[in-house]
Image 1 (tube, rainbow, N blue to C red):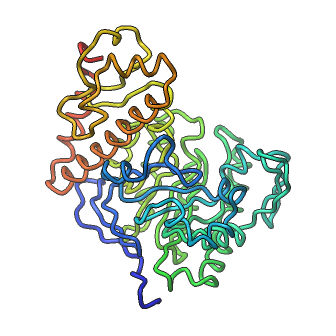
Image 2 (image 1 turned 60 degrees about the horizontal axis):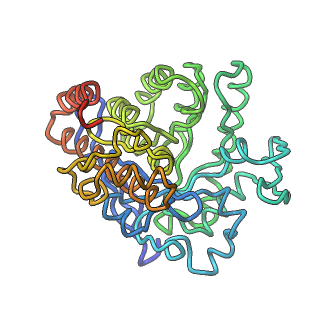
Length: 383
């Protein structure tokens, strides 16, 4: 362990039913869980200053291995002092493995036991991503939490294909762990998460979770959901997966999701989330609020002097009128994306804090029910 590196750790503070209140410690700070991680795909949370991301209450952001390996390259980021310095974010960073983007974005993919060969969606240049190379890239970026390389397939898929991908991901998990230890990740205070696969096949999900639990990962993720399946399928997989995941390690549901997805998944024992939804929605004129979703493209807002929510702490939410936001959206002004993304990230963080406080107080079920009722009822005049 480096003299200056704080070791990676997870402390489970309180449970309320299956919901968990915890704390992740990394060399770049402490993350209160359940936590939502804004997605900073290309070393930026789109349309936001990192200072404003911090002000929303976010304590960790996500960077993307696939995009950063293509440009500016992990080696360049390393020469420039690492990803924290490069993007001016002094707090915890999680990087994904790049596997999902290879499957969804890259051209002419060829996957085998060794890894995956593909052409960049940017310029057609050829690359070869293996479990070892993915961990090497994440090590060069200097992220605090790193992910094994896995194969993420779309749902629905034939059970035999789901089984093949799950078993390959288990073998890649072992190789990823060996590379992580070879690169000295534990000594730098970094953590590596294994990824549970198995599609929508319960037996495969359980087997994947049990096998990964035998490996010495610092955390465990549920992958391969939010890939086109209905919410009830995702929740059913969580119902059978989280009970067999290690209790003393953080649990991360990848790529999820809507505010309702977060609420339902915390109820089932998930600690960490990421999703592009709040930033993407902000760029398309959609605001998330405690009243529900507000579509600022709608002409009904053109003469509305009220803010999105005058009681919110976020300035984007409480100080700009709906009429002004509507005007910005209709004109295609960049400020519209900035303000609505700011609002959305702030709302997600407020929701997560509400869940943390409720779990700690032993009132999560009441919080769950009230939040559901507020969304269902909404504020019709406000929407």
